[in-house]
Image (cartoon, rainbow, N blue to C red; front, top):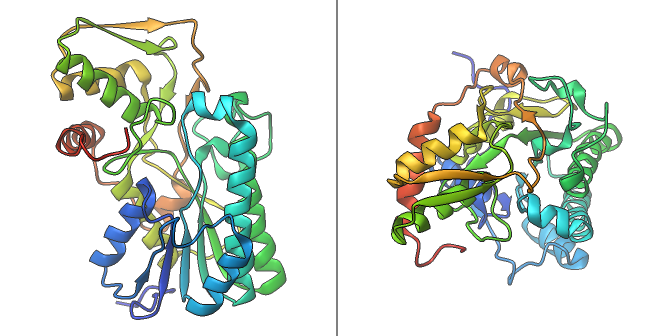
Length: 320
């Protein structure tokens, strides 16, 4: 059997930016399991990625063989809609600093991680990669989306100008161990898990969720995402970004029902229709990723059940 076309040097320094976050921590687990024995990570107190001079000094000192840009300021609909300037500015600073510094020392392999929110609000479903920049964005997270679109363009520009083999991946909605469960910044699934778990603990009869429950969402376990990232690093090399997901979606009401079952909630779910629904449907076309030889392996119901268990086991120490 022929070796993969971009077999990474597992003994060389590999830098995971954002290793403490949901995706970054999963990447560290996946890389360690794959035999990478010189993983480089830095906490924010050790390296502020918004501090340009510090990032350049770090990159010149480490000179990694590969970099994964998983660091980002993230949040749910409420946080994105309330603090758009913060989401735009901080994410641009982080990714520009990292990629400029990586280009200066000519890091041969870099993966920039974005988000499926880069696509137009009313993009044809399932969403193909060429839907980018074909229509207006969802207004509640357009600032974050613009930052991620800029990252894709920077990867493409570096490929053209410097000839480096950098790539971009755009995951769908992620969930799993290490997620953010705070009221202000959590995404859909961790928000639901916390809400239903607390309802069970408080013996409540009713849980109220935002919106109508009718929008459809695709969810991908973060360990699947990390697996896909490593696969792309070793099997993909093109300027265009790659969708990362399952290619399957469910209504938010269906997802809430799965969470209710996993938490043991036996009460009634109501919907606050005065709150925004966000994008009506968002499911990715994953044909390009599938063509490289990768597919997801974690069924949604199983993933939700294990994430609920993780939340309960770690409730005293996780971000709440």
